[in-house]
Structures are given as structure tokens and as C-alpha cells.
Amino acid sequence: MSQQQHPSDISIDQIPIDLPNTQTSEVDPADVPEEIRSITCGLASEHPPTNPLVVLKAARWWYIHGKGGTDPAFQWAIEWARHLATDTPSDVEQFDEYLEYLVTVGFADEPHELW
Image (cartoon, rainbow, N blue to C red; front, side):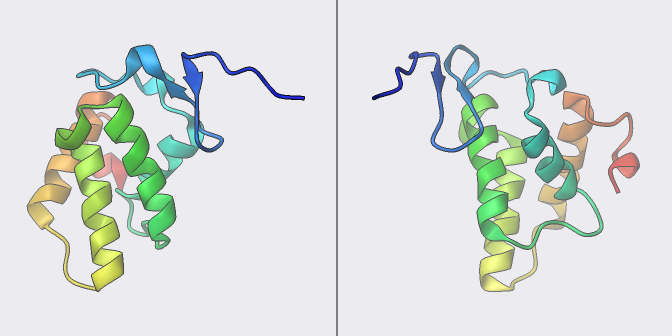
């Protein structure tokens, strides 16, 4: 028996992709799935995720639902995954832009609250 999938409700894992809200310039924090929110906030914390696959899961969500390749959350997740894979220092300026973006999106009122 096959399960019918609606064109606006697709996913390749447990995190749904909302097609009408893809590649938007504005992300409503209420629309961010809890798992992605947790990973996203974790990337801003003192103890960020160390599993690149988890980080890339968040990167994929932000790429699809944010500003595509220019989304700061996507860019920071990719940068952090690169850091994990190559053990090279990450870009501090890009991290600062990421924190500011999370404030803009509404995850915190000030960047220091994300630590």
C-alpha cells in the first residue's frame, strides 16, 4: 500500500519542507521546527554540535526556507561543518553575522543571549 504525498508537504527525513515558504527573505521563528531551532541555537552556543550530519541537516533547512545560499544561518552551518571536517579555524566574522541574523530572525533580543 503506498502513501500519497501532497506536493506542498514533502520531506526526505522527518523535517517537512513547506514548499510555499521556500527561499523566502523572512523566516518566522514559529515556523522553524523544534529540531532545527535546537541545532541552530546550538551552533551559537559555547558547545556547538560536533556531528557534521546534524549540522548539515540544519544547513539544508535554512537553505530551503531562508535566503538560499546567502542565508547567514545556512552559511554558518556550512562553515561549522567545514571546521569539523578539516579541523581548521572557523571564520569569526561569519559567526558574528550569524549571531546578528538570529537576533533579526527573533531567536534572541541580543547576540550575547545566544551563548
